[in-house]
Length: 600
Image 1 (cartoon, helix red, strand yellow):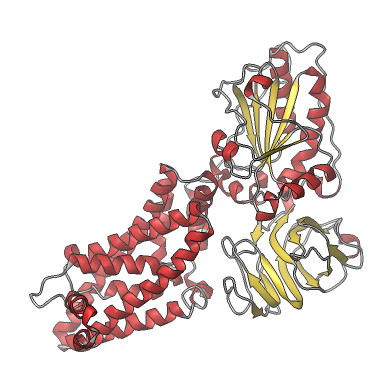
Image 2 (cartoon, rainbow, N blue to C red):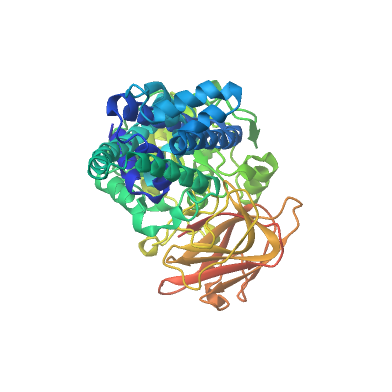
C-alpha cells in the first residue's frame, strides 16, 4: 500500500516537471469545455494509455519500445490534425474525401460542437494520443516501479503502481485544467477574444507537436533544473520510509538494490549454540527449475537437496556488491561442505552481456567459484523466490524450508551463525566452530561506506541521471557531445562522438572521454570492448593528473589500462583521507561500451 501511495504522489509531482510542458497545450485545449464530458475523458485516455505503454515497455522488451516510437508519430499526426482544426475550422472540408467526415467531427469536438456540447469520444481519442506523447521524467519513484516490473515480469502489483502514477499525474493536470478553464472563461468575457484564444490554443498545440518531433521534450526541457522533480521525489521516498532498513550498500548494487527499501535481514541472531534464538519458518523453498544452464554441476533438484542445508546466492558478475560478498560465500562453501552445506549461485544477469554463458563461465573460473552455478537468464528462479535484490542470500534447512534471508552486503557473522544453526538442526557431526576471517583484496575488499557520497550511476538512457554534457542525450544515434569544464558532485558527461543506448554508451569516434565528479574511496566502471572484441586502450586522470598511488587494480600508476573483456573495472582506489575528486577516462580506440559507475 505504501508503494501505491508513493507512486500516486510521484505522479502528482509530474505537473512541475519540465517534461510535461509540451503536453499542457493539449490539456488546455479542453479548457472552457465541460470537465465531465471533455476534460475527464481526455485525462482518462491519457493516463490509461501511458500506464499501458509503460507496462508493456517494462515487460515486453525492445519490440514494444520500437512499436511505441511508431505510435508517437501517429499520435503527433493526430494531435496536429486537432490543432489545425482549431486554427482553421474550414480545413476539414478541404481534406481528402475519406477524411472529411472524421475531420469535421474532430473540428466540432475541438470547438465544443455546433450544439455547444462536448464530445467525450473525441476528447478520449485526443487523450489517447496525448498519452503516447507523454514522457514523464524518470525520477526515483517511476524508476523504482519500472525496474520492479522489468525484473518481476507482468503482475498485478506492477500494473497497480503504474496506474497509480498515471492517476497522480492526471489529478494534478485536472487541477490545472479546471483552473485553466476559469482563466479561459474570464478572458473570453473580458476581451471577447474567443476566436483568437481558439487559434492561440491551436498554435500552442502545433508548437508542442514541433517540440516533441524535434526531441525538445526530452532534450532542452529535460535540462531545466529549476523544475526538476527528482529531488522532490527522492525526499518523498525518504520521508515516507521506502528506504527504511536499507543496507549501507543500497546505493551500489544495480536496479534491484533501489528496492532495498523494504528489505529485512530477518531477526537478530544470538551466538551459535544451545542458546541460539529459534529461526522462523518462511515457507517451502521454490525448486531451482527454469535455469537455462548449469555450471560446475548437473541441474540440482529439490529431491537431491533434501537433507542438505542450502544457501542460495543471487548474484551477477559485474555487480560490485556481489563481488564484495563473494569471498564470504566461497569461504562458507569450503568450510561447511563436509558438514552438509550446499551453496548454489543463481546468476541473474543485469546487462545483456551477462546473459552470454561463455562470459559467465569465464567469470566463474576467474573468481575461483567451485560450487554449482545456475544461469537464470529468464529470471525464472528469481521470480519463483520473489526476489528483488543483488546480492540476496536465502538459507534453506534440511526439510526444504526457507529459515532466514539477507539482502545486500554485511552481517556476515550473523549469516554464518544461521548456517551453523541449520547444520546443527540437521544433525551434522563434528560441527566446525568459530567464524571465518576473510581478508579480501582488490575489487572484493569491503567498501568504505562511511565516505561514499556518490550513487551507482548508469550511462544508458533507460536509467541515466545527472548527465551534464551538451547536447542532452540523444537516444540510439551517434552524436558529438561536449562536457562542461566544471562538474557538480555526481554529475558526469561524455566528450566525443557517442551513441547512447538503453543500457550503455558506445564510443563511435576514434577517441572519446567520460568525466565524473565523485566522492568515494573506490571508483569502478563496467566496460566492454567493441563487437569485434579488439582491446581498447585508455588513460585515467584524477584532478587532471595521473592517479599515482590512487590507481585501481585495473590501472597502472601512470593511468594507463586496457579494456579486454566485458566486466567491472576498478579504476580508482584512494589511499588516506577521502576527498571529492574529478575523474576522467580517455579512450584511445573506438568501440568501447560503458555501462555503469559504482563506488565503495
